[in-house]
Every structure is written in structure tokens, then in C-alpha cells.
Length: 236
Image 1 (cartoon, rainbow, N blue to C red):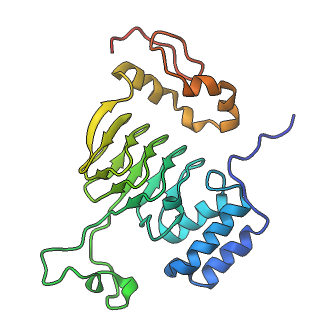
Image 2 (tube, helix red, strand yellow):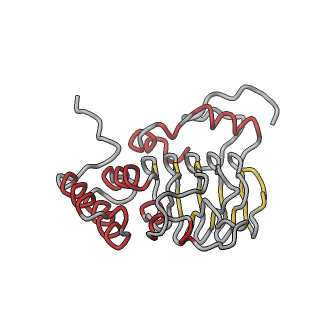
Image 3 (cartoon, helix red, strand yellow):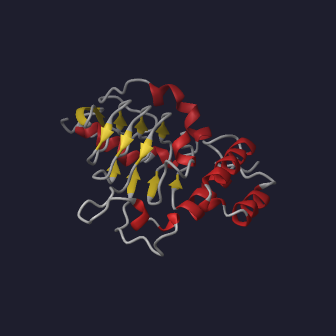
């Protein structure tokens, strides 16, 4: 019996890419980081599969991208600041921007010269760290902006194109607008609990592909689903 295919791909050139990243100081020079990350993605099957691009983002930029998640912002240090953790199977549209911290407004100046050590005038960043967690299978639409005030986008949540997110988004909630507000939930409460309990996103796509139709079609809450736990009869 053959071994299962690894979920992520690693190129034979991965050690060279990692060495170049360190040697050139790409972590501090985005003009170098971007082409090296793009090369890793190209060599390793794209953003859904590249192990090296994920390792570079995690080790040098403090951004953790789960397997099978994709989106240009996830592999661009200029748009994915340190402190982001993205779950598996997350979809991020073009033009998405993550902003984890505001400029300080209580001092004499708001300018980053006085708090960003990358600009060469201060030795350390005095601002408190910020984090953002994006749950598995979330979808962030094109041109959306996630601002400070939002520390979590839940599992299966949907952020509409162009939305400006200023607060947390609950699991399976669809938000839109400026600022983003909830429009609806994708599932009734009992069905949402079944999807969460299934933890289907921990499975490889090759395994889930056998149930591709069931993964994309509308769920009947009364029916047995090949990926989800059996319904319990609980009212929605």
C-alpha cells in the first residue's frame, strides 16, 4: 500500500530558498521577500500547497498560514503583519488588507518614526502586540480590510467584498458593509454545531474529494451527511 501524499509540497530547492531569505535579509526588505516567496509558491504547487512559503512567513514574519489556505495577502509581508494565524482551507480574495494596530494618538506625534524600529529611529517597538485568528474555511472577499478591533474571524465566516471589519466575526456569520455588520448566519444553531463537531478541515483534500458533491451542495438538516455527525433531532 502506497503512502498517502503529503498535504504540503516541499521543493528540492527549499533549503536554498531558505538560505537566500536569511542571507539577503529578506525579512526586513520586502522587495526581496516578495520574489523569493513567489518563487517558493511557483516551485511547490501554488499557495494551497507550498510548505516553504508557509515556513518563511511563519519563521521570519510571524504569520502562520494553514494548509490549503490561499490568497495573495497571506504571502505578502507588507499586507500580512506579524501576529496573524490563519486556519486551514481559508480563502482570501485579491486586495485584502490586514491592519492589526492603529497609530498612537495620545502623544505629540502619530508618525511611525517614533514607534517602528524598521525605520531606524527606535530600538524597540513600544506598542502592545496585536493578534488576529482566522478560523478554518473562512472566506474573506476581494478588497476587504480587517482593522484593529477585530481579533477573530470565526470558522466558516464570510466577509463580503469591500467590507471594513472593525469587530470580531462569529462562526458561520456573513458580514458586509462599512463598517461590517452581520447579515445572516449560514446555518441554524444545531447545524453549525454539527459542522464544528465534524472538524472536517483536519482531513486532506484527497479524502474529502470523494464527497465533493456533499461538500458544496445545500445541507438538509434532517439528513445524514457523509462528512458530518448524525443529526440529533435538536431544534434549530
